[in-house]
Length: 299
Image (cartoon, rainbow, N blue to C red; front, side, top):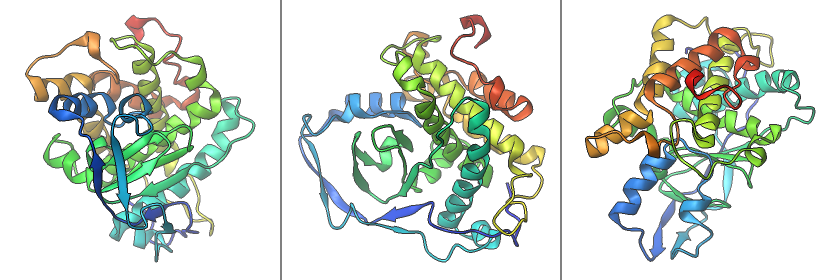
């Protein structure tokens, strides 16, 4: 999507952490890294993988926990020109949308998640995050974490479009996990299992649907000066988002990594499912994003 040049950004929604030096301690091994990438690509909670340090991983930081608001993000023109400001603009639009829409889902106490950009690696309550983990939402922190270098991998390694909406779809998906946290979905859903109709897949598909719902409303969501954040969305831009959704489907990732597809190990849904639920949200809104109770045949 393209920001209106004259839309106003208030700033402060996105912070960037200082660069970390590296990771010390025992390693997880090549097999562990492959499983980690497949299972946690735009995932929810890394605690079951990286733990709280008991697996030998620790972060050596030089101010890595320090975070400052991304600088010089004042207008939509800035968001069109800078990746950091694009993340700020997306966050402000998402926050504006969900501060209203959350009530329609029964959330009476909507709160804004923290959103941290980082380079290299950083500590979270869900464990150590690095570029290889991909973007994720950490429920204990109620925060999104993203190394923007991931977007290069999304395009070069996973074959997704490099368009701005493909990038912002990732943020909107993770923001959707924050909505699920506020709804109580994480507490009420068993996400420990895998499989084509598992709780983990249902949670991920709902986050895709929530992302689509935001996009469907984005061109009418207004910034602080009354100007809409975005210009009207085009079908080519929707195709960018669908390209990203397809690229991170379980079947696509597994086929690229191993040459075979194992539905019993799915954690996020197929490429087709992720695209379908994104479009469901885009066309019908967040209230039509019930992936949790529908039969498996409807996923």
